[in-house]
Length: 516
Ligand code: XMP
Image 1 (cartoon, rainbow, N blue to C red):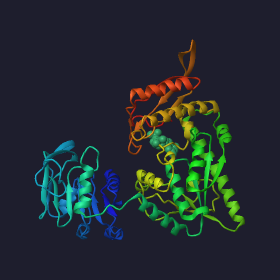
Image 2: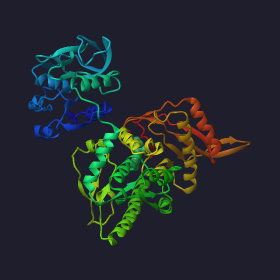
Image 3: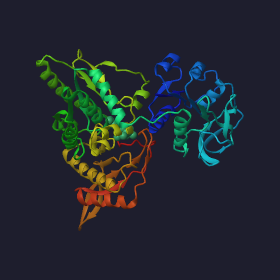
Image 4: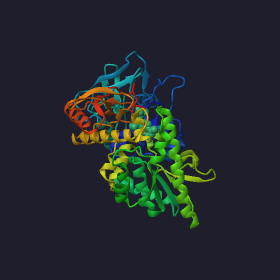
């Protein structure tokens, strides 16, 4: 892989994603992982990420200089650029030329990295220190008002670096520059394609499970569906999928799993019909956290029941289910401190409630993938667009989109309104711009309206379209007025007891994406 060296800022993961967008495989590694760990990864290039520190600070994160002698291509970014400069004999200092945000890069030399760019271009910076002198043998190729050396390269040594952040969208040519490093300076070929990824993962899963049995909980979401499809390809009917229908799903979701998913994969599916139980347990409950806890608990009970049944079947034949498939993605792995290989965990850490002496090995075929890669692999495996392009949907489902008590009638209202919003947003071609659009029923609020010739006293529906890259932060999506108008008209006409549609104009923070 291309190793992105993490110096403790939030940039490393984003850089890794950008490298993969250039269709080259990349992983994040801690800066202090040690040279043996670096070598063990067999890196084809290193990218030194940004970081919070000054290279001369006491506690500045440092890279073992021997790593730079491994004769592999290196690209330094921001702090990584400064570390690289300092390690190779250049000079870094704090001369007060700090820059935060947008600034202008002026090219001072036709280098390989910026070839084809105009002589000035906007870039995004965030630095106090600046490289004052490039290391010997390096050509300075650009400067900014606050950084006399804003970019350098040594093509012979296959090394380059930039003070600005090419990985952020505020640097318009950033991806092009990063790609030029990978292709032109490092000489790498783009071979990280969905087909290759899928083949490699299927082989890996086959090796891991051998002729064992596996079980997978399907949530209706993209990740569990793609994970299950991969494992199904690898081991066929030795995988059993379990889908708990808690009655809090959106219109068409159960059918999507039962027909579309099974149709596309041929996977063996057990559906647990638990809607009545969930509704019963939720009756009288309005508090969001209590709703979540009840749903979590009931979910585990239902899943546990289904697993026992599957285990029971196989136990008669004398075989045990040893593997639990999960749709864990790379961002979760990186955020929880990395770690590689497959953890052998007590099952109840994951699916709770299962008999204590039962141990599953985890199968996490997606643990090195980003969301867009998961979607690409899903398409490669023939999963339908309805599943692959599906927007995120919370596990507790519509229950946390009804402000107030959850009842069957309210669920039916919300399901209708949600379907209308989804239909119209898709019809308007907005799916790719919108991360997700929760539709919320304010069940405890009523307002006066007039419909036909009479007064109404109905509930408001809230539209919450948001744009986001990772759901950690989000902005409200500027949906065109005409589209909002159609949605509003249709919802008030078609959903009984709803007489008002309102739009949520709150970014995250301060609002969360969901209302509960
Ligand atoms: P918030 O509301 O915290 O949501 O801004 C961030 C993202 O997470 C989703 N979400 C959940 N997903 N189980 C899930 O699987 C949950 O309990 C849950 N709560 C929120 C939410 O839809 C958004 O994408």
